[in-house]
Length: 248
Image: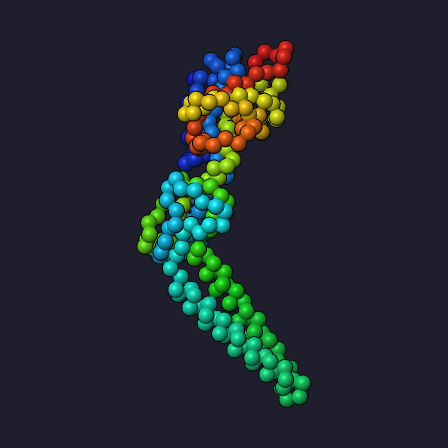
């Protein structure tokens, strides 16, 4: 019996339970994981003013999940925008004087450079201000909230752990000798312990390396049909049958 392999949070590894004892019947322990899982981190240092979702709650792509107090950044943008408008007015005056040959070319170039620099500063401040709002990169659920409202956090602080609850992956470890007949697209059945139900599935991909000591290989599958009520970390047994005439 091989020992269990640990991975953080939702993408826990396959339970490597009695592999060789079950291999003869084609039954392999399998675990469900989310295809898309992410830990959202702060891109700025600041105080959290609101967290709109709680652990276990659903959200849609583009929804606001968390906001920061960005009063200072907002004022910086106002200042740089005003400086940009002033630079544009000076450039307009310089252009009119240039047509009258009442200004040197170097002064006109300087006025244009000032506008370019002001535009760049406004762009930076605008980009920083957008980081004050954390939006959902995809639809799904919150698995862990790592901060509290009104907490001041540094840049890079982990905020929320989320996953896509519409797409799951099945992880399992099978004997490497099965590679003779186990291919991408091979059908199989999986029965989950938590639901007691059996689901049709197929092999979606196979690891590119074999573990030499245990002579095993990690294999991934996907459910053939969308199913509700599933959660990452659920486990069960996959019944994988070889083609006719081949002994597993």
